[in-house]
Length: 279
Image 1 (cartoon, helix red, strand yellow):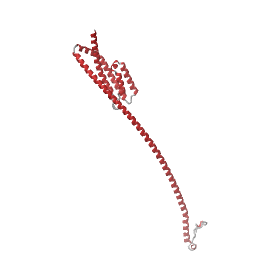
Image 2 (cartoon, rainbow, N blue to C red; image 1 turned 90 degrees about the horizontal axis):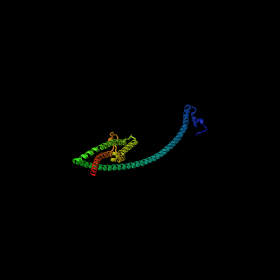
Image 3 (cartoon, rainbow, N blue to C red; image 1 turned 90 degrees about the vertical axis):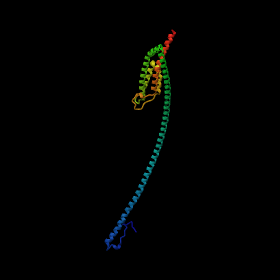
Image 4 (cartoon, rainbow, N blue to C red; image 1 turned 180 degrees about the vertical axis):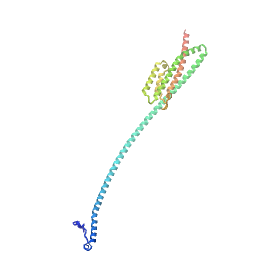
């Protein structure tokens, strides 16, 4: 039995019979057993330390894993909440934009219908003016063939030619100003204030001009400024390709100038005949 109070002998009891003659061999065997027991205690201590260290390491690793999973779960919930909020805001913004787009579509549709109706009305007026012009031309031919009346008509038309030239020049200048104004309206870089200044100057000029008052250019210009939004393609460099309603009005005014020329001549003839009859 091991004796803990005998450490120098490592609790090893040697063979008493072998201490004499076989001292060398006996001493070797006894020494080996002592070294085996001496190595056993440190190895057991090392194993115990390793077991404790491994257990503590596993506990720390598990603790880190649990904290990691907890952090990942919290981050995942936060990101999901942010994603839902962002998705809700995006859907709300998309719905608002869709509603605004639909309103713009309806407004553009209304503008198109109004411009179409207005263009049809102008075409009808243009047709009536063409018929009236044709009728005046026929009257002119009949009066020309009637001798003296033809001479009077020719004289009256010659007298109204100056008014016709001035009216034609006014319309030509107005056409150039409308082309510049529409180009300013379609431009992405020209200031809006500059276009509004051009419109004010045009209205002021036609109001002061008797020819403009006779042709009612003011109301036509206001209608063009309000409704004509036609522009050519983005890279267009030809200013005359812009505008739609303005060209309808210009053709209408040109025909009206011709009609008024004949009307003025007719009124001059009728006034002269009335004066001759009163005498």
